Amino acid sequence: PCPATDAPAACARAFAEGLARRAWGRAVSEEELTRLVAVFQVAMDNEGYAAGIGLVAQAVLQAPQFVYVTELVPVLRNV
Image (cartoon, rainbow, N blue to C red; front, side, top):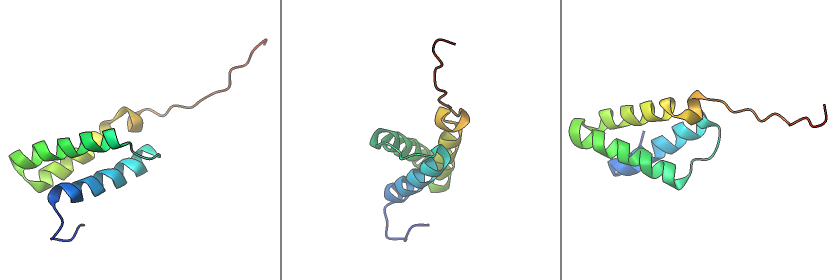
């Protein structure tokens, strides 16, 4: 939770960064954060703060970075 004095977008950004970092297992790029905050803003403008946070959570958990785990396997040559 953010202090009541924080702007909703700043709080949503902190939430999105923390959730995405944990879900995706890596640092979140500035471009990804910008997109997540835009998702929040659209939902907040139409349905309120809670809807915005909920939509950010859905976006993070439905992203390919979370759904698909890529494992790099060394290429065996001359087998």
